[in-house]
Amino acid sequence: MAINNGDFVRLNFTGKIKENDEIFDTTFEDVAKEAGLFDENKEYKPIPIIVGGNHLLPAIEEAIVGLEAGDSKTIEIDSENAFGPRNKQLIQLIPMKEFKRQGMTPVPGMKITSEGSTGKILTVNGGRVKVDFNHELAGKDLIFDVDVTEIIDNDEDKIKSMIELHYAAPNMDINKTVIDIDGDVVNITLDDVAKFDQKSYMDVTFARFRIAKDIWENMDFEKVNFVDSFEKKQEEDEEEAEE
Amino acid sequence: MAINNGDFVRLNFTGKIKENDEIFDTTFEDVAKEAGLFDENKEYKPIPIIVGGNHLLPAIEEAIVGLEAGDSKTIEIDSENAFGPRNKQLIQLIPMKEFKRQGMTPVPGMKITSEGSTGKILTVNGGRVKVDFNHELAGKDLIFDVDVTEIIDNDEDKIKSMIELHYAAPNMDINKTVIDIDGDVVNITLDDVAKFDQKSYMDVTFARFRIAKDIWENMDFEKVNFVDSFEKKQEEDEEEAEE
Image (cartoon, rainbow over the protein chains, first blue to last red):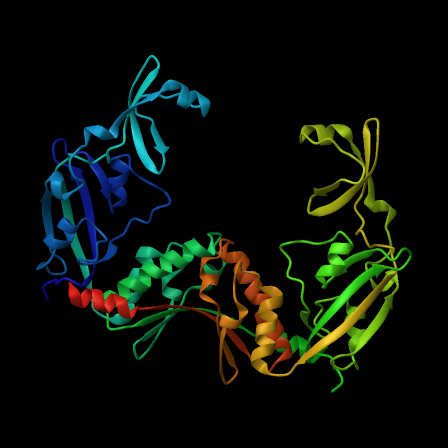
C-alpha cells in the first residue's frame, strides 16, 4: 500500500552535501564509521517517523508519499527547501578578549555556543575572531538516499514508534512497554527502568508531551496517560506472614 | 475513637532537650521563630503520619496510641529511645591540611559533611581539628509536646496525607490531586504543576515508592498508580478546523 500523509513508517537514510558528496548524517552504522560520524550513544537502525509530522525535513516527508515498504528513493533538496540560504549577518567578528575572559583559546574550526546558537570559528586574526553562526548546512543543496523499511499498521506499534522517537531513557527496553487502549484513551506503562531516569521530571514531561501530541494529531485518541505502577510484592506478604 | 497502630493522624509537636529546654524542632511557626529555627521553605502546620509507620521516633508513635483527636500529651523519651548514646569514636581529629585542601577555614561550631555524615567542629588547635560526628541529639533525653489535631478516617484523605508527607513538588496544590479507587488499585493524578518538577525523575520515583509502600502496608490496596495525563485540548481542534 502506498504511503500517505499521516502514515507511520520506518526508514533508513543517508544525507550528503551535493557539491562534494560529504555525508553528514546516516542511520547506518558502517556508513557512519566510514564517514567519521560514528557516535557510540546513538542506535543505528531505521528511524520511525510520521509522514508530514515534521520529524525530518518536510521535503523528505513529501518525497516519500506514494512509496511502498521496501522502496528506495534518492531525494535532491535545494538549499531553500533544506536549511535555507547562508546569511552573511550571521558571520560575526568577536573581540579576542571575550574568549580570553572565558579562558578559551580560539582556533579555526572550533565550535562555540553563544546565547543558544552554535557557531564555527572561521579565522583568528590579531584581536578579532570571525565566527559563522549559520547552520552548517545552510546554503547547501542536499541529497538523501532513503529506504522505507516498514509501514507501521497497528496502533500499538505506532504508539511504540513515537516512544522510540521521542523518549530516550537509558537502557529502556521498548519491548517492555505495556500499551492499554481504552476507547479514546491510551495508557502507557514504560519499562520499569524508565522510573530511574536521572533527567529532570520536567524534561521527561516535555518528551511525553511530544509523544502525546503525535498520537492525538495522527490517531483516533484524545488522551494519553503515562502510568507509573508501584505494586505490593508477594515476597513482602510472605515476610509479613513470617513475622 | 482512640488511636490505634496503623491509624493516619495529623499532629502538632514541639521537641525540646530535657536538660536545658532548648527547642530543636516544631510544627508551629511562632515557636520556630522564637527559637531561631524558622525556615521559610518549611510549611508550619500539623504533619500527617501513620502511627507505627516510622515517620517520627517510634517512642512518640507508641505514646500516642490510645489518645483521641484533640488530646495533648507530653512525652519524655530517654536518649536510648531517642537518638542513642553519644559514641566517643565518632569524635575525630582531622588534620588541618584536609580543610586547606578544600579551601575551608574551620571554625568551632561550623558543620561539615564527610562521606555522608554531618559533623560539628568542636575545637581547632594548631594542625588538628576536632569534629564530632554524633547526631546532635545523641545522648540527650528529649521532651515532646504533642497535640493530635485529627484522626484521618476516609481513604482519599489518607492517601492525600501520605502525598503531603513524602512528595514535595514546588507549588503543588494537594487539593488538585485526583484519587481514583478501583478495587484494590489506587490511581493518583497529581496537580499538573508536579509535571514540571526540576528534580530528577529518579528522585520523584523514590518519593512515590514511599507513598505507595505506606499505602500497601496500612490500607487494603495492592497497587498504586501515578498517572500523568496529556489530553488533546478543544482549542487545538478548533485551530485545526480553521486551517
